[in-house]
Every structure is written in C-alpha cells, then in structure tokens.
Length: 277
Image 1 (cartoon, rainbow, N blue to C red):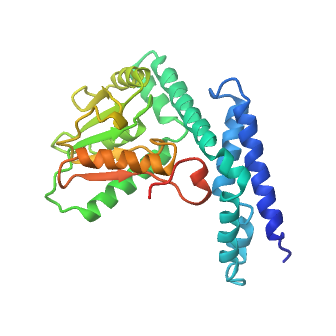
Image 2: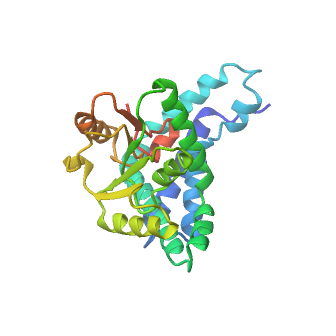
Image 3: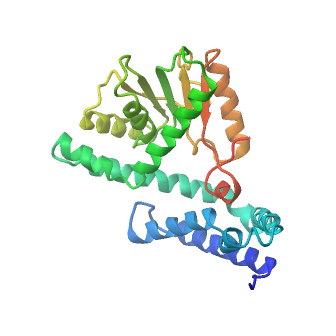
C-alpha cells in the first residue's frame, strides 16, 4: 500500500479548505443555490472525511500507528497559520449559510396552500432525518442521567433560528405523552422569531406547546428559571471563549437541577462550529 506523505496530506487539505472559504466569501449571497450548496457540501465533506479516510478505515489493523499519524495530521491542519486566520470568518459564513438555508425552507413551507402540504414539505427538509436521530440520542442521554421521577416537561431552546427543528422534533417526541411538553424558542433575531412563529402555526402546532421569545442570551434578557431542560444551539458563540462565556451566563440563570444540553464540535468540524470546553 502506498501512502501519501504526511506533509502532502496536510498541504492538500489546507488548500482545499482555503479554496472553499475564498469562494464562499466572494459570493454575493449565501441563499441556497447550486453553487452555494456544492461549496458547503464540499466543505462539510472535508471536515468530516479527511484525506486519511481510506488509510484509517482500511489499514488501521495492519498499521496501528496510523491513528496517531491521523491525529497528528488533523492537529497540523487546525494549527496551520492560514487556517487559524480564517477560523472565525469561516464560522461566520457557516452560521450565515445555515440561517439562509433555514430561512429558505421556512419560506417554502409557508407558501404551501394547506397545512397538509406544509407538513409534507417540512418532512422533506434536507436534514430532517438527522435532527430526528439527534434528538432521539439526546433525549436518551438525558434519560440515562436523570431519575424517572425528574420533571422533563419544560424546554428552552436558545438560538432556535427561523426553522426551529430542535423544538419541533422535541415536540414530536412527546406527542403521545399525557402531560403536555412545552418548548420555548429563544432567538435574538426578530425576523427569525416572526417567521418561525408563523411556520409552527402553519404546521398546526398548538401555541401553548411551542412558544416564541425574541431575546439575546448574551444580554441575559430571558429568564431561564423554571425550565427543566435548556438547549444551547451549536452556532451560539463564534469562538470557544465566547461560547464558554455564554454558557456561564446561561447556567447562572437556570434553576437548580435543570439540565443543559450543549451541541459542540470536534476535530476538523471545529472549523464549522465553535467547540464547547
């Protein structure tokens, strides 16, 4: 088996990431289009499947040292001066791109002539299945660290965005429960709150079960006391330091015994989302 020299792998991966960043940063808009979609797909692929993929999946048993080499290469990529220079603006682009993707789908759903068609459109959202699986894993993890008698009926989702997938999937997960689960969506963008409110009404969700609040988590303008579970969206905070600061403020406002669920990133995925320490 012939392996690509380590420095060549690092250089190639850095160059590909930089190329995606440059092209995305030069676009006049990040609204979904063939070009925007392809660039983000390429970037996500690079951050999820590195050039070492074939080596680590096919030869790790034969060459145990390769996992160490793989980790070393990722470290070299993340600490490369050119990558360090773009991490924050790249995360801003990813955040803006995700917002535009959610806004695009929300507007498509709102244009549907009936609730039935709106729900069918909602089920076709690009990452619907991913969210269903993610929420299932998170709620199972929550079950594993809480007692059966502990309340889990009042959720807050901080950074809910224009398409509140987390809130909708949580609500769906408890559809058959006798006691109603209430999910509060919190976002600092008035447009996102307005659109997501209209979306949930269009989909037929009860206003008492999914509620909306325009507030800035960083400014501590929303009272988190009384919530059993608080979600902090992965895109809240553009740096690890900023995210830690926000986490501290959130925890200060939470009730004793309440659970905080954080979405973070690791390895090259930290180029897309800030890491939670």
